[in-house]
Image (cartoon, rainbow, N blue to C red; front, side):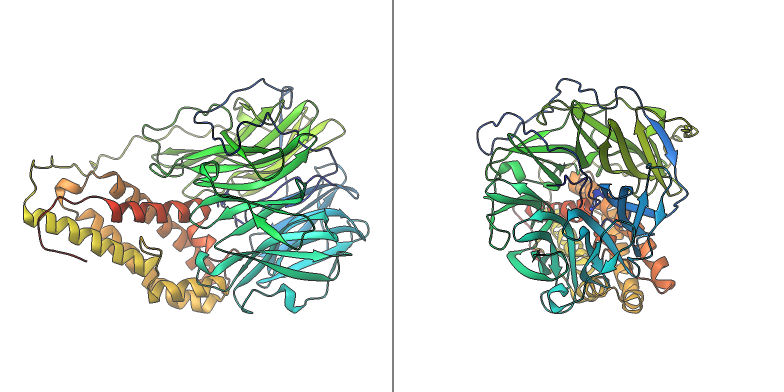
Length: 589
């Protein structure tokens, strides 16, 4: 099997995934090197409670060179060692499906096909030569090539449509296995996460495909590998949990039993090796919203052990929402494993983002590679910089990602001549003189009026988010439904018409939080909700600019929510509903 070398989240349209960005999220492919070795398998389902630091494997020990490419706006989500040297795939400016080739990792040329609105997210070697998968015009799509230089789209059929013929269908990753090739992804009927389900496509030759539904609402299958009982897929499940599936032949799939090792997590990449499977991704702290880099190991694909990857650098105290690290991809290298992703540190002037790397000799214990000037990503109000793919060829490690510009940037180890070091960013300015909201100490026994005010605040805020996104019960108002349907349908005109109402609902939510009763103003959930409203409004600004130009985001609702944001928002809204209120008072929702 050809080893995959990267996954950008759906996908993420510039967000982490991510986690990606880094989709967080927030968002498949292959290279022709070896497979991972899973670490010692602890008791099935066990979760380590603290970061693990292991022996420092040699990847990257020689240092790194940084090379910014003349491919501004390119986002690479898949990397394959093969063909003319390297084959990369992704999207141009988050809008156009694209494949590039390079003989050396520095000089890249875009192929004539794929083209059009979409994203290429997975690559595999085999069949006619090479197979690429992704999405085009909201439908699943696949392309084939004999040499990696010239590509042809396979015939579009009804199997490439979403479940109800609308919404989005996307192949996120592909592997040579099962009857020939197996691709995994998602099919959405619109209306956001509750309207989507994991999806699998199989093909004998990489040209003719048949779809098999995986009936777990809210799931998204991000990657697939040959291993376990036959095939193993990983991704995210509903309610913000990591998920895994197994199959003997690629047509019938079984969801791995949920457990604490999957809580608040998202798996973006998986590899197989002599002793088991290695998967990587991130988790999101349900209380603070902080990101943590994660690895999962399994001997059979059915029982998984999760661990925080390495020791993280100092954070804000307490960490701010979306502050931390996430892993996007992992590769087998000379003396172990190298994982790559991004790190976010919140400053007064935005999110400071850097490239992050981790090394491991066994795939179970990880050491964070020390930061260096070449790892600088940039400063932004949104999460968009980080490493997305990694591969090894002839003893040289190549990492590709995005840095401020935005530029598509390549790092090599050992360093190559001609690398550059970015100018250091200025120090963060001091906090504004405007004082934060100061809470008045809560009285020993709140009055009935205060209790009523608190209940009223909770109800009104829940209602505002119900209109803008979803309430704590996961239900969505008519304005939010219309907006999310427009996003999933990639209808720029409908997005432009529904967007103002969403903006007003978010501003209403901000106003409610700013006017909260003093004795409740310091509640942690209110701080979280303020931060989330700011993030959602910033995402809305970018969507509005695109819609005004007649363009719709290719990643649907993820452009508004991202992956980490949507997970944490729902968790925070649920927490808001569960906050105890002292007895007394009369106001109810």
